[in-house]
Length: 158
Image 1 (tube, one colour):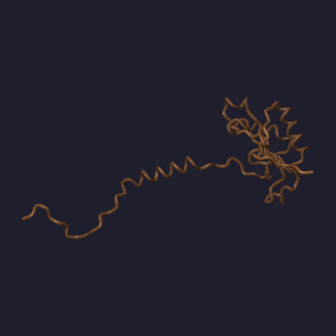
Image 2: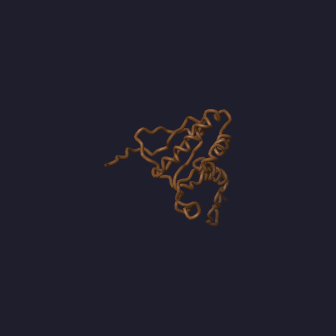
């Protein structure tokens, strides 16, 4: 009589699923960390001009103002004149101050007094619109203005 007996059925053992929840949660955590959520849906055309001296902007201290012609899918509704967008809405020049205060309140309390206004202006936007925006910013004492551009050096030929 032998001490060890051989198995008679050559069955494959079941797959061990004990570590499956760990793997699922690890993947979930990975995708939560690397996914970037958009803050605003651009309603205006935004082809930024090029600049050769560019610095990185800390987004937690900035309120963004987008200016330009409405993008092609909104031109039927809003026309082709230059418009101002703050957040996800178009804003008239007369309402920029109120919209900026609303956007400023969304920042962390300790940064609300040190806010930068970041202008993302399309390269083909009328300078009168930009001047009007800057005038409203002066009236609201928001004097820290940054122009957002793309890196590069655009050569202008005559």
